[in-house]
Amino acid sequence: MKTKFLMFRSSKSGYYYWQDNDTGKQATLGTTDKREAQRLLHAKNESYCTPTSAINLQIARAYLDAADPKLHTRTWQQVMEQIVSEKSGETRVRWVTAIHDKNFDALRNLPMLETRADHFLAALADRKVSTNYYLRRVHNYALGMDWLLKASIPKRQSRWYGNQAPHYSFW
Image (cartoon, rainbow, N blue to C red; front, side):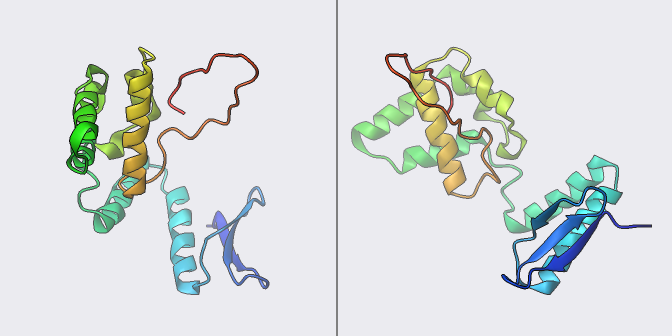
């Protein structure tokens, strides 16, 4: 059986790259270590050859569990509590009030790994600026602590022109 991806090394940078045999698309594997590059390429080929996403998800969870055992169970409530524990005085009072907002109820007990952009958008449905502000802060804190694998909602590239009122959204 023909493999989907092949590997090559850049003579200039020394980095290893993969190439899709069907489309010709190329991208870096992000390493100069041949063994590491081979493992990454093998994982790419294996994920392509395994049509069942359930097994791919189980394999991914096994790797993630080795990296951070709490990753599967950490909830947004735990993130909010951690932020509050680091605050003092009036700032702490503001944070305690903010995290008790009913808009966060849908996220509170949701494992972070299972969070999708839809969950954040539901929390922002009433378009309150304070919800937007604190949700963004909680999300960025989790990213900064490496508790999230990637941003759930990417930053929006927008600008305000003239006298237009700002559009309050998550980003």
